[in-house]
Length: 220
Image (cartoon, rainbow, N blue to C red; front, side, top):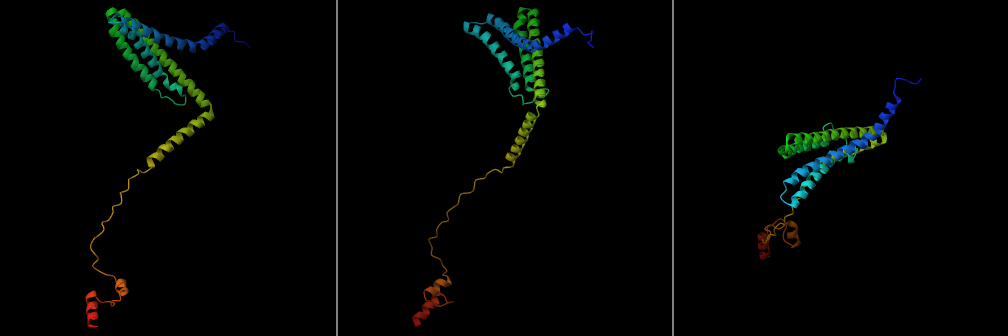
């Protein structure tokens, strides 16, 4: 039986909104990056002393916003690299937001408090969109990874192999250099003692000293 309490048009509108929200959210985030960079460039260019500084007044904020987006979403390049609750992307987004607010305060304050509040609100909206997109992309990545058992097993094998390799590296002893062999000096003096075999080979008496052998030979 069809539920007459549910507005089918509203249900279709919700499905349509869910289809366009990802593109809309990323479009809004990129738009806040561009608008924030252009506004800061305009106010910096008014105080620029030359044409080069006027060009840099626009290029530097654009580069900062591009680098901000890269730092926030960098770890999405590798979905298997799981992020914690306070990941590097959230820390980078928060730190760059504080720097942008300080810059907006000092640049916009001479032009009135209304400009300062407007630009600061725009930057806060961009920060909230960053966190929401980052949270949803992380959750979608985890759903995709956890539901695929083959990828989960592959990732588990990778971490186990990495831990085993680190333990292997820690267990390898440090190679020590062996001392170089030192040559023994050859003695220039003749040996004082003569072995028994050498004495017998010369025909001398066994068990007698060379002096006794010489006396016995002279007597003969």
